[in-house]
Amino acid sequence: MKDLDSAARGLLESARVAHLATADQYARPHAVPIVFVIREDSLYFPLDRKPKREDDWHMLRRVRNIETNGRVSIVVDRYEEEWSRLAWVLVEGVATIIESGAERDSVAAQLCDKYPQYRGGKLDGRPVVRVAVERAVSWSAS
Image (cartoon, rainbow, N blue to C red; front, side):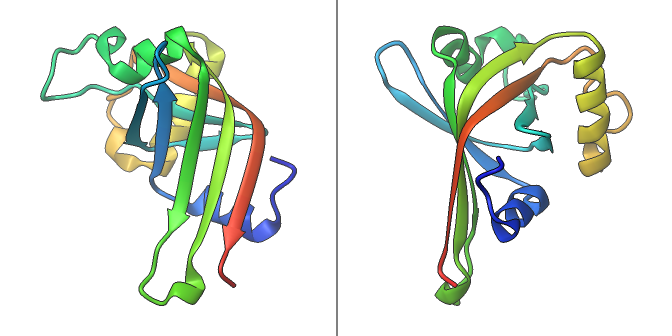
């Protein structure tokens, strides 16, 4: 993410929510909101529990898409009624599911720091997804 200026990097680091876009083997798009953290040139998001559905994370459409086609896009935006303050950052890369190990544990701790709702073991045993960023672009109205 070396291509981003400090304002775009700041928007990306301070954002609480992003939108992940994946595509299946037929190029059908799928977009969902995610929470995330950044480490160096990678972006990570959890595969947390979904209370309204079966707890098998393998069944999530985003996971099936990543397993079929690891290329993803992630957008963080700032919308305000005063349009001179609009901005967005688009990140493109390759996603990898990390089920266990030191990297997963370290990222889970970072997610708990950023999102206190995850404290108390809510990410225990849950995988995270690493997006190795290949391209990052931004736009700002100002």
